[in-house]
Length: 127
Image (tube, helix red, strand yellow):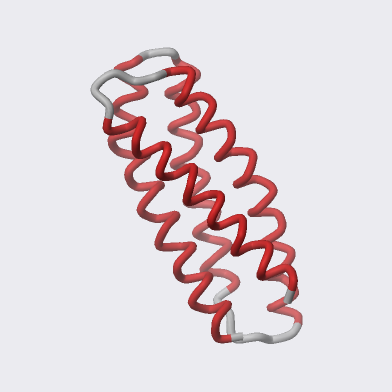
């Protein structure tokens, strides 16, 4: 399945951006240009990746493969909520809002996204 291989490569690219985001979050002072760059890159990869996944998941559903399509699609919507909060904080220009959003929604988004990717890859290994 070529689509699964591509999705796994995109997972690796997403993980690299998550590591970069964590590095930014750990700094005492936010490097705004780097944050914007990393967040925009993550956003770009994520959008095309999610679209590709949703098409693949629907194929899994049509072929009646043992894959939790609804659970994965729900997780996509939940993760987008965290991403939106972070984007809004960046757009506010308020360092306080950005640090707060990164400290809460950023951490939750990173943890949930990693867990989501692991679940997907575990299922990919079974089909």
